[in-house]
Length: 171
Image 1: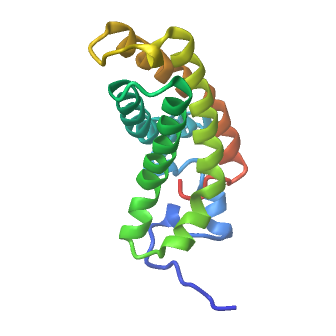
Image 2: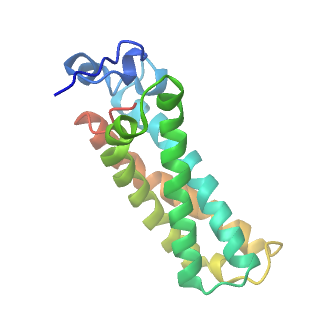
């Protein structure tokens, strides 16, 4: 087995026992906060990544008059892509390879994004934001705004739990 050195990475990005002790408080450099504060910052980061893909997928689905199911699939796939991309970008830029970076973030991001996407899509669908015929309909924007809040609130305790178990190692 080949040993891969992570000495070139910032402390919160290193793999090992030392990083496990500091993972939750050091979430993206947000030192000094409680576990809930760190989880809030991680969830905000997750929401940013999810919203990029979610908005793009919903906008494309509405603009192309796709059926609701296709719009949900597109928005969710793009949310995962942008969420993972936003999290992995600093790791890749620091010199970490694609597979080590993906393996580091996979479980925590997949769970967090999954919970957020379920909440967001349920709210968006219930409010009719996915079924509008134009991006200029206020209901589209109202639905995505409320869905964003629902996604954040659903993922926040999940991220608290993940951080407490060192399952969001990139943070």
